[in-house]
Amino acid sequence: MTMSPARATRLVGAACILLGGSVHLQQWWTVFRDLDIGPLFILNALVSILVGTWLIARDDAWALAAGIALAVGSLVSLLASRTTGLLGFDAVGYDTAEIEAIVVEVLGAVVLIASFALRGSSSRRSDSPSVTSAGQPGTDRVGPPADPRR
View 1 (cartoon, rainbow, N blue to C red):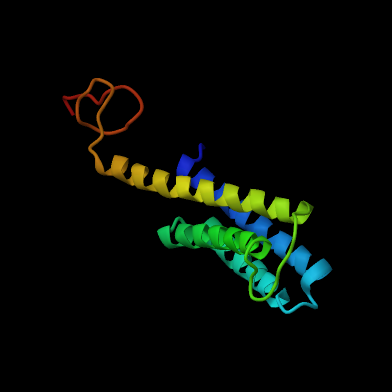
View 2 (cartoon, rainbow, N blue to C red):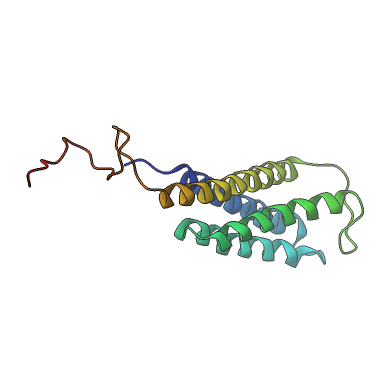
């Protein structure tokens, strides 16, 4: 059984969301748990679990939108913390965890946007009437043509 491109990209996007959440959990545990910004790392990890699970469980436009918003929001927050500051928190430079987060958040946003686009194109294709290999309207049936005498 083959997987549709929309489903495959949705599942890759879900994996990226879950990986992003795991990076935030690891960073909370090792660096940020005693800082004022620490609760946002736990919040990101929990929301990532919810959205990632939603993306795996359902083919839903709202789940895709939530995944895209989470990935983009996480990325914008990280970049803000390195430039203008975020809720009184300023950081300098990028270590391995920040680079990992940037990679999975950018990749997650891109593949979820692709999944959204593929989802729309596959629904348009399913609305069109099917055509047999001979160019005649019919079913997508595999095998010899039906006997017209029946």
